[in-house]
Length: 332
Image (cartoon, rainbow, N blue to C red; front, side):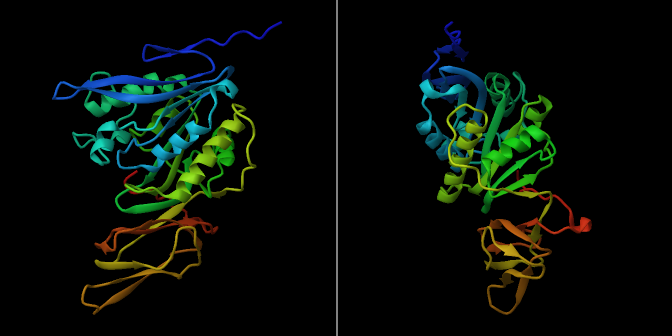
């Protein structure tokens, strides 16, 4: 007996047949000029049944690595060989992307606006559209980000490490670091967790820049997750990921010019020098030291710092419970 034919997928009023790819525009709003504004999607509707996975990039409009990761992943996918469906939104915050801004025109952070509302602000309406047309159709999500505000991150997955389903996906993604991260009100991840949808948040590189290492790790990770879900043929075996339960940002004790002397991925011991802060006249210099044994997973790229600024993000790989304090990107 022949296998039952897979049904088409209808999204945004457009039908996508099994074994086909399609580009879809979801209307969002009308600009003051009278032009329309849409959320672009790429849909790969596999010929065979399977789960649905969404990929999202540029929820913050200045975070470009996710856009490139999705472009390269889509280039690898063949709908006729795919089991299930991939719904990709390379640029969710189109307004911010066009203006090279993290935010929407009203200065709202889209990643503090989920699950959104059909009658709310522009950010709320965009969040609602993404939830109803993309997230609610999916079984798993992968949200792609970079560091913000002149910060660069070592490739890492942030997720609920206490959830077995999510951890299985994180291990298959196999970023160098997998970090337990608390939920932020209004974030896409928090909205998905409330709906019972497993989600991985990938952090790698910095805003406004392509980072080839971050992009390569992201592409390989997404493809491994699709293989783990049996949506495509197995690829390379997943390398080990380092599970981190806590981390801390080392902050500036004084204002001045910061010279970084460590690197992303460096293993450090307590007291190791991470950099130094000096004034513009060279009259004073203060060492910045690692607070505990760990791995450098984030750094500032801006030498000009003020007292209290986040300088170096260190993942805690020690065992002392008094040190266990989660400290995600201050702006994510």
